[in-house]
Length: 78
Image (tube, rainbow, N blue to C red):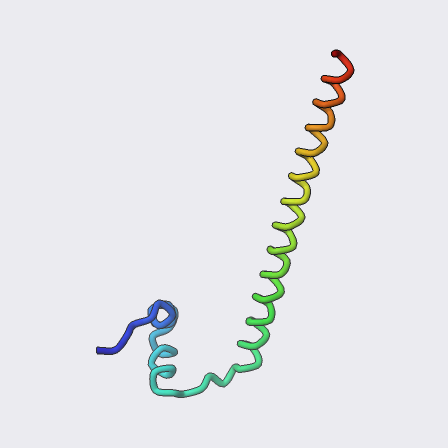
């Protein structure tokens, strides 16, 4: 019994003809466009990662600043 992968389902739902060609072993003629799309996704993934890291650093700095303000206020009034 053949294994049905989620990528096969996605390909079939997008274009059942493309799925059939893939199963027959026919290579896509738009390899340059596929490579460009893959590179675009890699670049976007890097940007998302950089954004997440920047956000985390910002939150850490914000929490550090709040702790320092509370410490300053506490030591001033005591």
